[in-house]
Length: 540
Image (cartoon, rainbow, N blue to C red; front, side, top):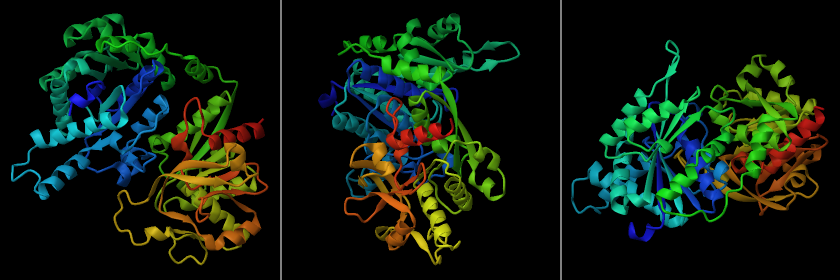
């Protein structure tokens, strides 16, 4: 197995001291460094939870679910990887303990282990290694970034660390590199950063047979050079392999900080590789410059059901940021809970916004607040972008107004509505399992010439990522079209409404798909870009 992939180099990332220390962003940024040097980069996230995927998790538990081209529902860190490295990942790029155990137990039930006793070592660790090597084989990447979720010391992560330890020995340490991202806590009473938790974290890692090649030291305060020397001494790494990473104003700066500390060169030297081309950072520098030197500011309201946890809408936030930066504007987001609008709260913040975004979600909580936001945008000609559920609620509001019936609804929220303008997709009606059974992944969409959507995309057909069970009910297509609802994006067979927009409005558009998943820092998604352009133009 290892022989076939000996040209692929594996870079492992673990976290120490606390969770959410920035492993994903560090891995994504390093991937960008390698791509800038001409290498093909692959990525894999190893998640210790027992869910098969995050698709059935509450957004409050794990943030957004990031959907890939092939329909895989994955961890939000895969969004960072795709955006920063500008690559398209697949289902093999997110491994969970649930997937691993399900595969091993399935093989045991089929008798594949010939009556043997199934154990964590070697059966679980072998399955983890198989999945790691599979990414190398299918991606044919020069370098694979592998992030182990959680924190060193977690019980759940131990099989992954053991699999990594075994893999390093099997394929040779010259083909692997281990980066430990750790946190330096600040003690206010003594006005100093402490390295002791990092030392303990590395000691824990080494007790499992893994010695890191590099340590990324994170802190909210400046990290003195003497601290890097101390970490190098006590953690047995080279001084130049201890990289100080103070919390930055924008995480778009992380690749540039890694470049400043010659992380790319250090890594290639370890692998005895030469850059295939000279890194070109002009576009990325322009992006960071737009962050620090905006020419104007813009307020955009996100009206959602999970706004208490901003990570539930991280791709939406990033797509808006990409669009704002493309127009040299500083983005301010007014986070508005749709339930608050139902109670009469949050309206001042909504009215201050130059544009309104209503993102996706599930369940009937806060639905009337989303409909109220759509009504306000329609009546006041405020730019509106509805994403998935946001598109559906825009259609419900439009129907209630033009057909003069407040009972118009989606059958997701009212099974007995007399006007079911949004209904369960026919192929979803007999499905009982909740995990991985929605309409998921990349599907084509034909655009209507002369529409806002066609103007934004500038092409006649696009492909976008989906995650939904309900759709526009075609029984109402003709009557609503007569009232001014434009079906500007349809599936190639004309069966499914993918984009709807309202006539005689500067920008009121909803998509059944999730355009936010395909936006990139230096290449904002066309719909977000056009939405931002109109919002800025109208707010001058």
